[in-house]
Length: 314
Length: 283
Image 1 (cartoon, rainbow over the protein chains, first blue to last red):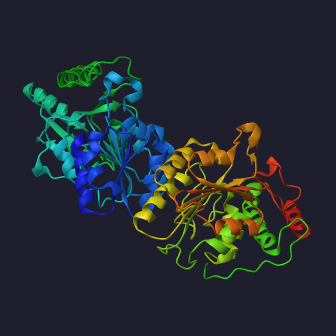
Image 2 (image 1 turned 90 degrees about the horizontal axis):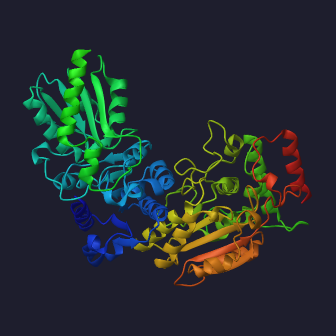
Image 3 (image 1 turned 180 degrees about the vertical axis):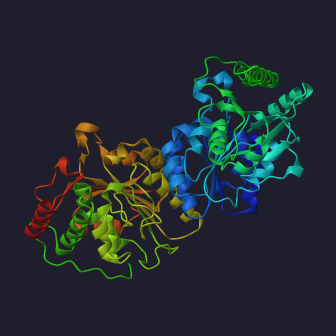
């Protein structure tokens, strides 16, 4: 996904003279081709997130479309005021690319885990927040970044993630994709990023237990596709949101905000599955941390079955 | 260089300010009266910097603020906006009577300048340390477009405590942005007190020099000196320029000069407005 994203910037840059790439001290192998072929529009800058976001804003003010790229924690936390004021207040078409969204950098500890990036980015007016599920979806998404007004935060996963997206579903920024829609479903799973793969697996497990399950892939957390959310949860007993992100302010909160504002009838029971409100306390792999937080498919399925059992007993 | 002729300077007064400098200060007081508040000292130290930029240096068209070949002037110390508003109004970017609505609900003029709202304002500033990074990006963009337009970023001395300023300074040197000029309004007083006591900037010229800038220092109220230096930028054809303007906070109002108390006033009575006007008459 990461390499596809950078390759796509290169493709876009060849197609459109407005595209600039600004990296902040990233491995040269990521961008070597661009630096060689388009040196005037591909910079590798230093460890200076505030500086590069401001630089991107300045370029955008003069008509360019800069893609500013570094590790997700740094491009969201470190330069938050630059993102808020230089990009969002001016509503400029700068694209922020965050490597290692979620628990990708598990062995590197809490300084490198971007687990509240979606929350803080979606709090900003004019910001669009996108977390695609795989490399092919990344390709379809990146094609649309040239014409989208305003800033976009693009959360990248580890790379090499199994392909679950389907070309026939197309891609439109701000339009969620029903990955699994069943009439008379009793469970709805709404997920973003690579967690959609786990949501689909969990849905199969639930179906095997006799629970029809919808899965909605929300690649764009902001602006949220409220209509698709409403359709996905219509008539279900239980909605679970699933995200590789703290439960504070991320996809689950966005979905809840939307349902509370827009859902005409009674809401289903709701479970937000994500990372609790804490910094990571251990290292290991991304998969191990997902397991520690109960976010592997079998755990998701088990949590939902247990919740349904409790609901029935109540 | 603009198409809107400015009033010529006439007789220099006792404290060294000519009629045009006094006139622009009276426009600042007019806005202070309109809003009943404002950054007084921080604006008055800037007047001659803004005046010389807009009278003599910048290319721009007040009736076409987005003219592609204009020079870009970013007031990074957004709290000094009254000096900028006075000059922009004087040049016809918007009517002078807009100053009377300063900070009011219906006004385009807030306590910090906003691009898109105020014609002639190039970037929304107020939070400090944003102007130079934006200026670096614009300078790169203008060079890439092969335009002759230049970028001028005016910063406060307290402002350059911000790390983002120095990140941008490193980048300006790396990219050899000779089309970028940083101006520092060095009035030596920040909100909390003297810069030398709060966070000493010295040796300031050496700092900019060591970051790869060609540096000049001048009396920031000496119109001729400012004009002379600004007409020579870039001071080195391969480097960005930094101009350290030694100024006096509150310049022109004897009882406000060099007084941190006058950095900002949130409630200015009619009696104080009368005193401010009177001080400018006496100058």
